Length: 374
View 1 (cartoon, one colour):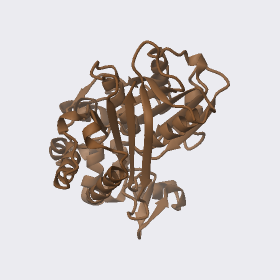
View 2 (view 1 turned 60 degrees about the horizontal axis):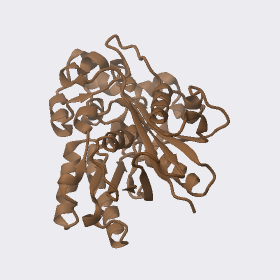
View 3 (view 1 turned 60 degrees about the vertical axis):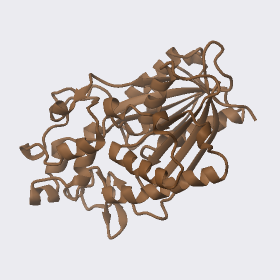
View 4 (view 1 turned 90 degrees about the vertical axis):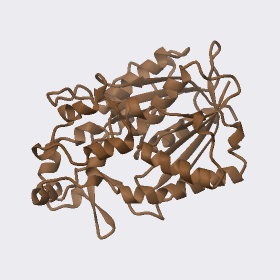
């Protein structure tokens, strides 16, 4: 079986960085008043700047497919390999531009490359690792020599005030619940990509994929993060099952929401997954040189660190790399944006090992990937 190497990366962050005082100029003010939760959410997530695909007039200058395509093109510009050699395109996202067709087809439509295979992965943050594993395994099996994986999100277009003000909940209390406000002040827009090949770079470092381990715990938890549906009596009911589009809007089917209490209940399960990989000998903490963990908020990282320290399985926090505070939480794009910055930072040395972690609160999914600098 062949090896798979991550040979180049890219990021595409639309527009200019947006500071905390400017957020409402891009996503608007719900009900005419700045949220009472804003300061608390920003204090917890510690994000100081992020990027939006819209301008201050509320016009979106990009689609999810377009920013993914730009990230793919940039990844090949950074590569020893030309875009014309791409054989397999794998995309990931939370919500893309249409119900059908798949995002990978829309992204391919933006690229000047012919005769390739495509695959679309849709979940939340974890879709990035689902996509990565698909591409890596195809390379290892010898099916393809060159693949590219992307993650792209435009969360902000779901944060328009009118998406909330038409719901029955808002009409009753003239405010949003914290489960919705948290996402409005935490999620942002962006795309990233990685080129994966059967051979390493000849003139620079590459990252060999040693293994990818992922696990769903959806049978233990109810749906935590939801969009396009509502939870009724413990089950997910689609907007399409409502009697009318107006009824779907009234019930809040199109207002993104996350059960924050449930997220914190998932943390011990994610840590348990990590501990199981330690027991298997797949993770040896003293051999890890860099930890690249996608977490949505610094407050969640704090809880993870407390638990890891308590059980004696903490990897030195000085080894952890994050750009959450100044690039925002970009969902499925985050792991690519993280690796892009680290890969080109000049910090990586031959033989070092990078442990990547991408949890997902959608319905409790957790993933790890071990990379080695070669």
